[in-house]
Length: 306
Image (cartoon, rainbow, N blue to C red; front, side, top):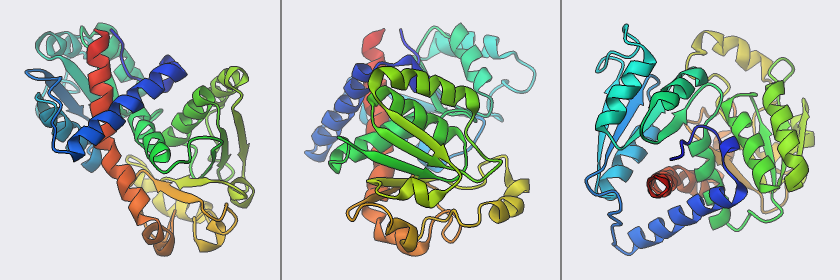
């Protein structure tokens, strides 16, 4: 049995297997065929952080695979209201076939997984967002940009940058990260990624200059400057991130046919301009849809490992 907590726990072969499974399921769905590999299976979805895409994609995905998903917020269960994580894990995993958790502290999901009898999926923590990266790389494959990709990430050194570093290190492509001073990537995660990159041949660089990162890139991506739980920092962050908005001038520094990705929600006029987002709307919303397909591929793959 495997959990899906970070991409660090998976080989390149396994990551590509999951994405190929997702691509196959998507192709089948587009022809009207519904894969029912998770018939009569139940997914418990624990949300300490709310989300549009995570809830809709997992719940719809489980339904389309023939199973059932349970939405569980802090108001619905005792987790966070006195019951230890390990007790909740034991109970839920004795009744359900898989668990997805979207929470704040990564240590919480690690503890839950250590007591769970069934696979646990990280739907997002403050440290990592691996399901989003599955969808992102799946989208890159569909647009033919996976080979010799140069990805430029412009913005906050957050869970998305952490996940991009691990994905690049595992798959062996070039990643350039540009953050404002004081918002750099986590040193421990960077060290882990660079260690993995020595084996894969990946190139990972960090800078405080967004133009340097974007120059010649094939993919430019970003994320909101103030994530959930950082609302009180929003005004200060807007000041600190001046010059980091991905606009038409910045995109002109990338390759002529470069694509823009965004995990959404997007705040136009902050991390991305209206013209860039709308100019790349097809790939951005294909990327959003691929959360559904990537997570279906992941759940089917995890179920087969049991």
